[in-house]
Image (cartoon, rainbow over all chains, first blue to last red; front, top):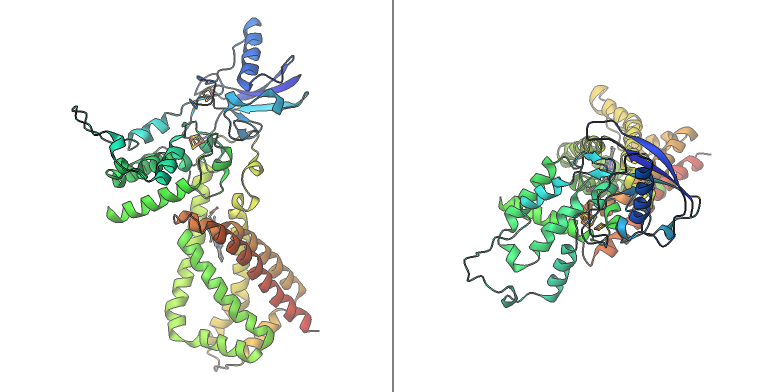
Length: 248
Length: 206
Ligand code: HEM
Ligand code: SF4
Ligand code: FES
């Protein structure tokens, strides 16, 4: 395949960036999107140019690092996949592909396509945990009976890999899907109920202070989420937040 | 947003019911309008609540829009919004602004004369004047056209807003399919009903 890539190049966080066009040839339809980027970078290095910086780690859809906004969609046109799981066969020979970093004030660009998503880490630190006694006589989690439906819902919420596609795709740059997945994962389980009130209040407070936008229920996040995290989680978080606000 | 929006939905339904009565009985319409215009509970409790509700809703709507636009200072070069969200949900501010402009005209049409009649010129109460005033307003084809267009945008606003407000309040469960159906029915039928009323009086005048 022969393609034209239009890629956002930005030397560092302060520098102004711009779109740069790169022609690329001999792309196999079986390549993953990141492999195609590797080929491009090899060529750039051979020419003595600066390779395109992009995040990646596992390359199998579990780490959430590979943040790319491809042809106007987070992780590209395919559904329920990350960029590393996107294949070049989803494109046609001769296509022009635009590649931009995930954009939100809360995700500042570090270089080219790499963005700083540590805002998510700080939201997690604000409440995305359960406090357990580690003195040696910790209770076995399996000793606590849990409704199968709740266990399944908690597990579904826990599949969020913190990739940030929900933020990148939302017209408001809202982080509600991510935060609600983290809140739900604990709120549904007996171990998480103990700290539920503080958790939701603190995580939402942190989310707001990071400068994410507000949710207006467009549902774009759910469509673009590589893990299919459901909007039900946002409704659950709204309930949790409402009742936590009343409890104080 | 959700509570004020739902409140407006209830108001809209009430408003529609009264207006619709004008299609089959001038007498019923006059008596209902007279009741709404003179009952102290409506005039001094419900009306201020409504005014507050409308103002709160659109002011918060603008605040929300400004904050949300500001949350992404550097825009995307290419953004395929239609790939994952409906046009209605992405353009609530646009449909809202059309409704707001319509409300300006609507106040000029009905509220200003009403206030004038009651409090400025202090004309004698006439419980039968409402129907005449209504029919008179729908003479102009331009005005009827603007009304029709505004209701199309109201429909678009509600197609997203109605069930969105349930999600905002945390309702997403086995009833959500029903709420979605109710949204479609309400958001299409009520504005269509208003359009029918306007056209009915317009065409009946000839
Ligand atoms: C006066 C002009 C109006 C403006 C400027 C306006 C603007 C807005 C905006 C910006 C939103 C939130 C954005 C979103 O959820 O995507 C919204 C939501 C909504 N609006 Fe309006 N609107 C207006 C009138 C109305 C009217 C007359 C009704 C009902 C008859 C209405 C019903 C709703 C509902 C139900 C919501 C959803 C609330 C939620 O999702 O929580 N609006 N409006
Ligand atoms: S909710 Fe989905 S899109 Fe958002 S961070 Fe988690 S996995 Fe990524
Ligand atoms: S590189 Fe790990 S999810 Fe894509």
